[in-house]
Image (cartoon, rainbow, N blue to C red; front, side, top):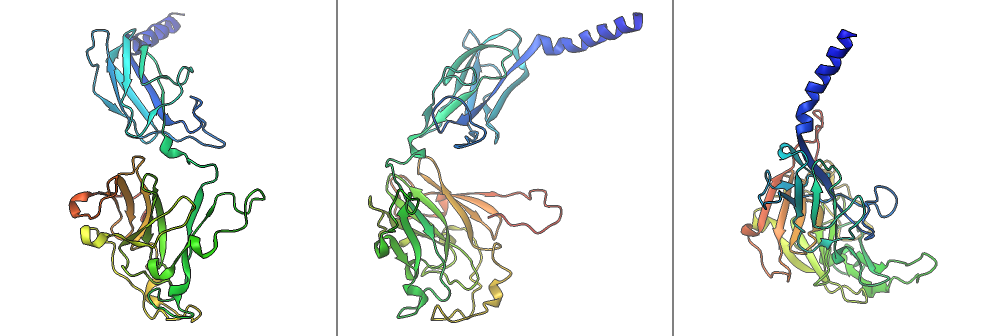
Length: 343
C-alpha cells in the first residue's frame, strides 16, 4: 500500500504545473453555409482559415502573451505560462479584410470578441464573405480547351481558328438547364490564348485571368510561356477579346523557355514535339488563384519551384513591375529523393 500511495503522490505533484497554468486555444474556419458550425464532411466541406490574428487580454486590459496567428489547420494556442489558470480572458480575433464574423452563439463558435475563463479549448471563430458566393442563381463556368499545332497561324484548318476557352451556364445539360452553351459568342479563339490552364476570376471587374501552360503538341499564344491573359466577361457570359495582363518574365519571374519544336500550321497535322515531352510540369506556370479581396494574383512557378504573388490591384492596375511581386520558395515535401515539381 505504501508504494501505491507514494506513486499517487508523485502523480499529483507531477500534475501540479498543468493545474496552476492553463491555456486558451481554438480554431478559425470558413463558414460557407453560415450556420456557425464547421462542417468537416459532406457538402460544403468547410476549410480552416490560415493567418488570422488572435489576442488575449486580462480584466485590466493588459495583453497576455504574444499575438497568435492561426496555422494551416486554422489553429491558435496560448501556451501554458502565458495565461494563468482561472483567469478571466478577453479573446479578440482580427477579422480578415473582405470577410465578416459568421453566425455566433453555438458552443463551438463565438463572435470576434469572446470572454472565457482559462482553460478553454473551444474558443473558436467563424468567418464568412460575400465574395465566396455567386450573385446569380445560375452562374457561368469557364473552362479551357487544347488545340494541336501552332496557335499563331491563321486561315482555314489552322490551330488559331479553334476555341481554347468556353463559357457556359452552370446548369447546362443537367436536365433543368439548357443544352446551348451560347455558341461562338461564349468562346475565345486559340489565336488569342494558345495553351492555357490556370484560371482565376476577379468578381468586381468581371475579369477572367488565364495563364499560359506548357503542354506537348499545343503551342503558346502570342505572348509566350510567361503570359497571363485577361478577358472581361459580361453578365450574359460573353467573354471580351483576350489581351495580355502581364508577361511574368518582364517583372522578374523566370518560368523557363518555350521548348516546342515543329508545331504544324494545320491542327490535323501530326507532330512529335520531342523536346517538350520531358518538360511538361517542369517549366512554365501551373495553377493560379486570386485573393478574397481581389487585389492579389497568385501563381505557381514550376520551373523555379516558387509561389509568386502579384499585386494586380482592385480596381485592376494597368501595368506591373518587379515591385508588385512577392516570392516564396516551395520546400521539398519530403519526396525521399524523388524528382518533384509543384503545380
